[in-house]
Length: 118
Image 1: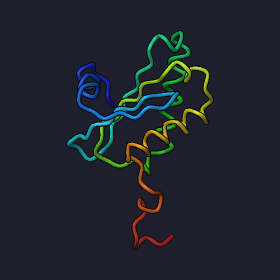
Image 2: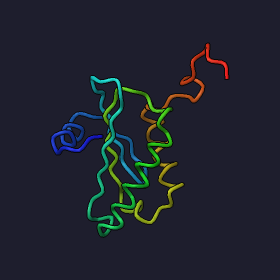
Image 3: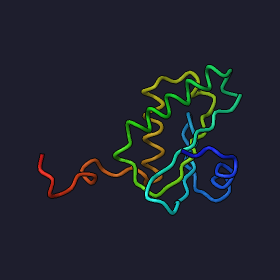
């Protein structure tokens, strides 16, 4: 997970971004074999309870998409004010759309081994 201000600043400067009414996603390739996420929830969303709720929902949406996310990226998700009143389903769909438009989601069929018959 991305946590330090330096990591966030690096993504703000050298990344491509995709926009949705509920959130903004910034992507940059990293040199490791996994994708790391960071979440930014500003005070314009509301109080601490609201901001924490939005972060929890976004983290859960990322967990649900886990196997479909391509490795090797740093991703910063910036919540926009309408996300404070959005449902989990709406946030999850918005996240899925921005990751797909950024080409960070693989097809579910691609993640399975071709020789793995279940």
